[in-house]
Image (cartoon, rainbow, N blue to C red; front, side, top):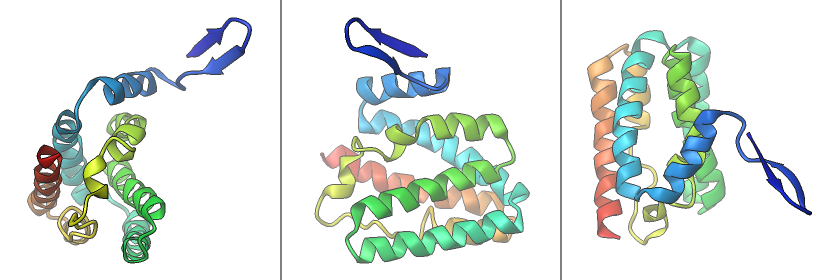
Amino acid sequence: MLEVRRGDGTYVRATNEFDGTARQVFQQHSDTDVLQLRFALDTQAARLAAHAATKQQVEKLRELLETRRSAWKARDYEAWVQADWEFHLTVAQASGNTLLAEVYQSFGEVFHGTKMEQRLREGFDGCLAAGHEDLLTAIEERNDSEAAQSVNTNLDYCMSWAVQG
């Protein structure tokens, strides 16, 4: 999908229709709206990943959690956001549902971009076990209900910070 700017050139606006939709969501909806969408996508991705994740994907998730934890301790916000995003995207990919993973990936800037400002406020805990370490444990144990519960606990926490702002 291209955008032509007369006298300036032609620019890639989106690589697919999902990306274009995600950009609109980013501009038109609140943090709460975005988090409510994540409840649907993340919960289902976690449930499916608990059944379909490969050993390689589980190991990648473990490595991303270590990177995420180290970045948070070092107050390297950009590295933390990147590792957190890659962790959640890997869960979506581990679901075995390529459509879910593609939709999830298209929302990357929305889900983990600058719009989610609660991460910048004093007191926000960027290393909760829920939705991350607990989720990985549930995936390893092939426990889909615990995987979903972990995601919901994490997103409830994020939602409480979004509504404070």
